[in-house]
Image 1 (cartoon, rainbow, N blue to C red):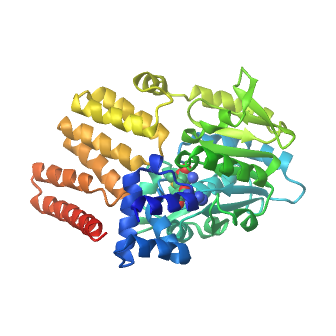
Image 2: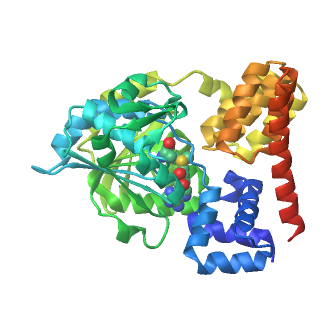
Image 3: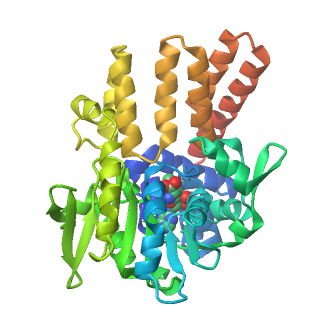
Length: 428
Ligand SMILES: C[S@@+](CC[C@H](N)C(=O)[O-])C[C@H]1O[C@@H](n2cnc3c(N)ncnc32)[C@H](O)[C@@H]1O
């Protein structure tokens, strides 16, 4: 048996496309999970994950990319805040709460940001209901605990930190009532059981930074699942990296002025609010659309010029692999400015921020900007603790900074990872 069969099985189960996630990342996750189960034979491990849902869960936990933060990308939350009361009035029946789904929720920063936005928009507890789902039990455990480090607030938002969290040493504990306002559950958006696990009729669904990891048939399946969960006039918010699939699903221009688009689906007209870079708000009906005209203007104004610049550097339809290849070539040519621009493109295309931080670290290292390099490599390692190469760079940086003890620690950690991986591969 080849490891590709296990990677293929994993793709079937959770939808993750090895081409976007990276074959090596998925293979590493398999080897690491085999080690954790004390199994040396691929056949034996394959049988285990097919028969034992806990073992499969362990592998899924190892492969997921839980990158998230409070109020990530800001704009969707601003648009939501400006429109929530209108949505509540127009979509909800008397006494009915506004029902919101966050899938995938990862470690909880997104659904808790939605809850804080609801409160800030003037809704009271009981007037909104938030359900949050993720495939990984490990990230859900973190979400339910509601305890975060400063890193989860890397987009700023310290006022929210002051208003809704209490400091516990180096951590921030979310307010108990806010924590209880989010119902977390484990589920696989593309799994056969998903529809049976969730109620229908969500007024708003957030599905950000997941579709990017799926191949096209899986994206279509995910969108159709979400559509059937949405209230007829509901709203879907997707991440900017997820938007590419929507035109190919038949979304057509509705109004040039606001780049609204619509599609006939399930015999009903659906309106979509598109943006060029930030995020997309998809509506299932036209009722809510007018409220979002102003929001769309907001979003258009926020398009950073850098996007156009990126498109000139690598064609907009380039795959993630193409962009990575381009960055590597630019590094060899020592064209750091173009390489940095390509990193921004990569950041827009992928949820795998660890790769982006890795390359930004490499660029800074080659320019002798050790503090920047150190910061970027640390972020890369935080997001992908098995990143042996980043650890080697951190060892070199510590050495250059005269911190021999730290250099040794990083190098030993890198050596341990290398030894673990090669012994796992030799045993197969
Ligand atoms: C990059 S995070 C996105 C979190 C959040 N939506 C955001 O944008 O900040 C991706 C999450 O998708 C989850 N995931 C991967 N496959 C999934 C699936 N088939 N169903 C549900 N969640 C999945 C992973 O566990 C991971 O936590």
